Length: 559
Image (cartoon, rainbow, N blue to C red; front, side):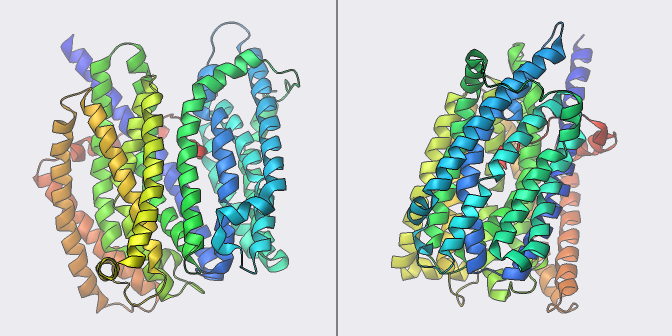
């Protein structure tokens, strides 16, 4: 009996890894195209006024998307769609028609109000851009991009249906089409329409994001029940379930909106540097942290509801172990190879060496919180699975306020203290370039999220006394291996710098690739010698056809 229980537990844990690898694989493909998108934008515009306007114009539409579309996210709707009994599909159609009608009316009204208020609202949000000759373009582009949350929200509703019916591939490829739309806008419409052409590309991408799922939705007749007579009791149940999560996501985006406003009063190109470095650090976060937290959620919810608290803790600990195992080496690699990463991904055309160095420094500061961000995603999922939405909401509100407070405080300190400014610039080797004040924003962001993860860790430790003990072992092993790996990579960069032409793309790529690859191999060897449990678990999972594992897709409102 005991052996059968242990075998079942091992299969479930292996399933967790396999589901995480599937999600990570899809996230990788989406990330590659997103990086191609960013490289194209960097090549054409560099870190300057045009991209500052472009990225600033996303902030209000993104907040609308998170605030309303997260109400109808896949995690909220899937439980309502997985109904049992007779006439299942008909009930699903009525439910989707009701939700779709309410969502569409709500987001159109909100978008229309912000469309009208944009000229008066944006000067308060981005005071540093008011005197820019491109401020009129900011208003026009913001108004245009208010179409984006409408189509992405519709796509979110479609995604719930495709997930329930096992059409995982449809949802997985949707972000690829979104990025393709932006690339089309930059390549073909910007030369013809100017900065509005970039906006047309974003809207096209949002339409494609929804359209790739539309044929299945139409064939299933799920849009045939749209109605103006809303069933408010059904909608109330959806809102009650989703409201805490929506508020938690919204406060984080409000914090990012405030950071963009602070960046607007800094040197030209600061908003662009912030966004490029943020996007680069989001790549490993979506592949590692988001994949493991999302993969763990269905099992965690089932275990908690069935009263299996011990197994629930085991799954939380397993996911946390592997988030730490993957994230810590990535942190070290991103810090050591930051210039090579930024130069290879973005260093082209108008994006010059000063832009590279400043973005690389910001990337290093973002990267130090990667493990903390991944763990926070997991802790939030654990609380949601346990039906506790209040704790993650309170912690997220606190961390959002802390992000803003630290950003203001560190920026003021950077301007007033020559010693602090010299320390930061010397440490990150950017003392001879302008605009370094922007580095205080990623530093404040990372410090706040490290504190957030610490709070979640402390709260969860009260539920399981063994949690820290188990994670301290993997943290020690992977940190030891990562430090050795970092020294090897740093030494190899100097050696290989004499062998390759560092003024060319392929020279910088080869230097970073070979130094990183050899360092990673040395780290893996050291972990093997240390008897790393995670290495064995990864090896076991990779032996199975993990890509055939069905799973729930990552919700776009969280990325």
